[in-house]
Picture 1 (cartoon, helix red, strand yellow):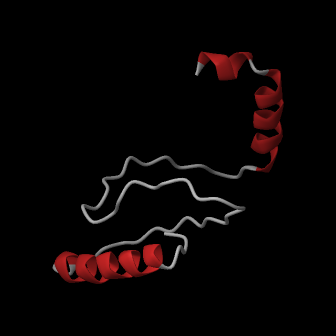
Picture 2: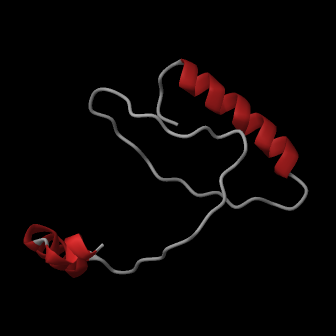
Picture 3: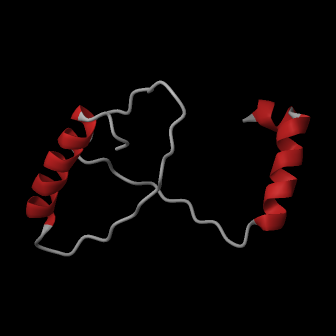
Length: 80
């Protein structure tokens, strides 16, 4: 972290970013047991960030569907 504070290019980027940033929220989240560690992929990749709100009582069913979908997408080398 100290190296970033000394990096002039990063400090300029941070200032430019703050001019465009309206709000920011940080969260610490727990991973799901069926979600493997990400591995680097070749080529230019596009990633998207998603968030979900789980309802009480649906976690097991939802987790089973999600685990199958992740395996399917990993087999097809799609973004997960």
